[in-house]
Length: 328
Image 1 (cartoon, one colour):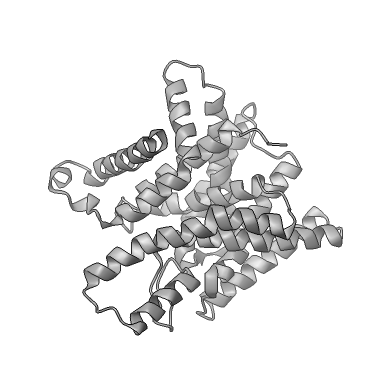
Image 2: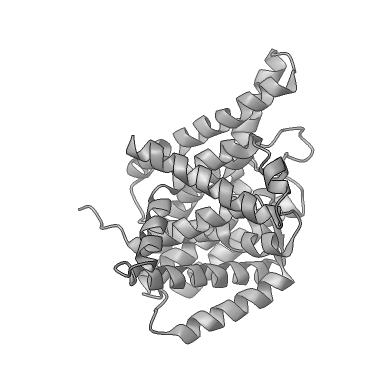
């Protein structure tokens, strides 16, 4: 049986992928970038958990390889090959081995102590691939031992803390983002549990949205989150901010879904639905548009708030190209 797509999930993904582009365009560091990074990637992982169903291993591997692992390799090469060609370094067996190590570790930043280069934005696909396998194993174990929600949450939180401890405190990055995937598993569990317990945001309860927004503002200001570099400053605070910010995005998405027939907001709703459905393509395009100096283009630098207009132009180019590819 094929499950029906939920528009609000696509809208939430659409909002998140736009924030990914904006977050990579605004000045670093800046309060806006800090705020965006506190929840924009967790939204994807929480929604991945929301739509997840425990599966037999063969089925899970088959789907995950085709949907995540293959695109990961393609996107990683699309980043690494131009980078290598522009470096002017001669191609040797050593550079080939170094490239293979980069693919295996799949880290969003250089691996400390090993001299392994970052794989670029493709880390997200590798982390999601590993997280799906890890989360599937965890859910099968939870079902086998009939663990309740509280015990599941404690187990996932402990796994997340241990995974981050390996990278944050021991400075050891594990292959294929396994250490980071332990934390992602906690985010997936939150989304999965929200669906199982029917804890989705409710548009008819705006006070919960306001409360979540206040919680996000407070805890985002007191913590820091940047998953690609395993930076989780204040484990509890950063995780609460990620949950609260993601809740707000989902609440707004559900509200927009109800306005699909409105004259103006309906256009916005349909645009965000497209962005969500094409989020992987937009992500891939954005991953390779890194070579374009958006923030330093002369015609943008001459404008007030150049990062604002650079974000608009960059979003327009990435989303527009994804639209052309999808329609061609």
